[in-house]
Amino acid sequence: MREKILVAIAALVAFGGAIAGPFQYDDYAIFADPALTSASGWLEVWSPLQTRPLTYFTFWMNFQAGGKAAWGYHALNLAIHVACCLLLLDVLCRLLPRGTAFAAALLFAVHPLQSEAVIYIFARSGMLATLFCLLGLRSWLMGKHWLTVLCFVPALLAKEECVAFPLFLALLPEARARWRQLAAMCGLSLVAGLRVIAATRAIVGAGSGFDAGATPASYLLAQGVVILRYLRLFVVPWGFSVDPEIDRQWAWLAWLLLFGLLALAWRWKHRFWIFGALVLLLPSSSIFPAADLAADRRMYLPMIALCAAAAIFLVRWKPFVIVAVLACFAIWRVTVWGSEESLWVEALREGPKKVRPRLMLSRVVASAEGLRLMEEAGQLEPENPAVYSETGRIYLQGGKYLEAFGAFGRALALKPGDARALNNRGVALMAMGQAEAARVDFEAALKADPCQFDARVNLKRFDAPATCRYSDEQRAAMR
Image (cartoon, rainbow, N blue to C red; front, top):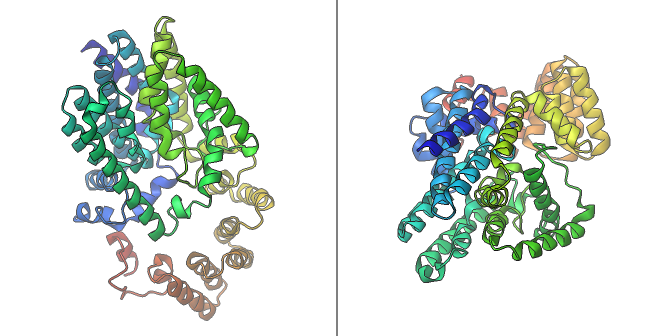
């Protein structure tokens, strides 16, 4: 009991400050789903196109309990993290000496590599999947193997990236004797994988699979660099970024180095934990492309094995001092996530050649600084329509309507027929007093996307088709 209390306290000390933090970038996308604000939304989140319905169900519960108050969402994230830490301690005590298990749970609780998963509300899916995977692992070690299969179902409904969990179980001793349960879980993984592939084909802007902008081969090649980055951050927790810059120049060398490290690990008698961590990382660091080559939140599930490996190695070297140092780094990470500006200033510092940090930072700084950032972004990616859309937004807010019209027009030239770009140009025309021309753009935007909310509001169309799903808040804005 004493160990459980200390592990919970460690997690709360390291990440408890996140409760006072704001929403960050994709967190706002949670509220774009009309089901969230509907009293019956708990049914709507289980849509066939929703790849992570369990996670969105928890978002729905958060909204029903506290609306858009960020602290409630952060509090639930923190509670899930604490629960994962306690479950990991319980599981590892069944596999390792108690002192080693305690050290591993502490590492998992406070390591700053966990920051993105714990603090970033949109990353809750990874923690939920880990929670149910740990429940399943606990059941497996207790001999309740079919209960493990049942636990795997909500894990997949929380986040599909846990599909490799059955392979992790297969590495355990005597796992072959439980081939029926493993086969059932592999079947569930296959169904989940096919469902995600179907969803990425159907959903525009999904950011993964067919919509990721990368081939499976190019994505796999880059993952050697990505995995080495994860390992480096685990050993030396410095140089974090919410949008890391991945240098593909050394991709082949990175894979050679990684295979060399695995060859060394193979000679270690506790190699199960190293290879187990890599197996759990496979779904996000193999051939299924994602728009972001690297994301620290993807390490949350693999950390259950990586922390065990580290604890085995460090148990004789006063790991509790290391835990205290890591907790200080975690507290510092909480402060970085404490504002949008500090988060994206760090990302820009770590990725000076990337455009997205400039786009995000331009939204939270003064207009003059925002325009300077967009000028830099245009030099880096002159064919990126998002750069000119953001430039137009800054001009529009500053009352420079002609300049905004020009910027929105350039964005539209780079992405013809885009509903949002058409609406934006219409807004600039309306501000310039050209109502009829603006109306043409708004109508064109709705022709491209009949449910484009901003264009429908601008046209004052209250008779929205039944196929358009708007929240109560959005419908109120159209009245």
